[in-house]
Length: 244
Image (tube, rainbow, N blue to C red; front, side, top):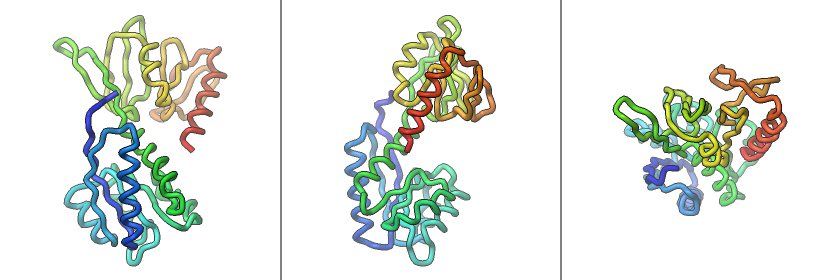
């Protein structure tokens, strides 16, 4: 996995100054205790107009949004960023737990309760961290071999034929030489499931487990060994429980 420091541009928007500072302090503490090497550039504001204006200057990687604010609510702002900054991840922060179901409409990364700020912030940042984790793959290039950092979330599956491994990603295929077992050992903690002696699949992209294959979010169907079906289903249940 990558040991490179990642620079993250983060915004916190809350109309209550005391709450704004509490969220900021907890964010820094959470990042320090995480496994992610990150440098934060944090922008704080108490109204939606300032947040939108700053995002036009330079997009944010992550925004922590209070829901109840005058003028532009957190939901109003989520709608804006969902339309104009689709790559920005959103985390709602609120003292009103009743908003959690309404929040789903805006597909946030997580919902942080101010009453459980430390606990919920750790869960929220773990979700965000998992989006940033990369896998270092040495692949066959035109002039020998090259090394590529691939976001784990962008990998659909690995396919192995003898000692040739093909990494199928959202953008292209990478041909590497090695052992699928070694790749499995490195990536099993990130939700990769061995469905066949020749296939290691990212659980994030499994849409359906069929009789003798799995259907991926890309529409691709990948063969599954009959004797692995039970294990694959159990692995998917563990993966889903870990996400909640």
